[in-house]
Length: 203
Image (cartoon, rainbow, N blue to C red; front, side, top):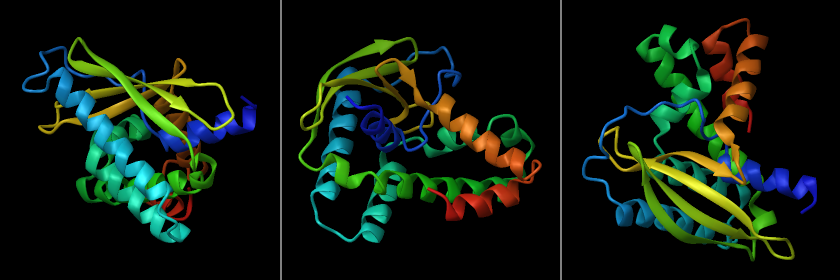
């Protein structure tokens, strides 16, 4: 697969998601089970492809993808992980504003890759328990390209079943997003409100 197309896929699939450094408490996965984890990812992918093939204008697609992300991903954990140590220092209102901007940023980041995936598909192939979460495996079939393995990590630690990580061909994506958010925050000299303003325009 050409590097540019592969980067495009990674950008769409992760939209800034998730981190190998993200720790989930080492406890049982509560009510979540293998079939529920698998069904969550399948439902998310069904909605993703409905949007991609809908023919909607880009602005509407961005909003639709933001809504899908909010519905199926653990936005709170993802946003905190992307922000890193600064999240612990943020006030509640300040973090809430950042979180909302981050969610919109993800929606636009997804949207800008839409046309690359018309006619492609992702097939969920299995699910298994891994410590305190479930790993759902899938294969992405891009038109005219070789298949790619995509793994989703699903937990109900927040009280609802949500995915909190995506690994594509061994690449854990929140590490990349954390670096990007970290660089944006550094340019703002640690000013979270400034980062939030930048995220409202980025993606």
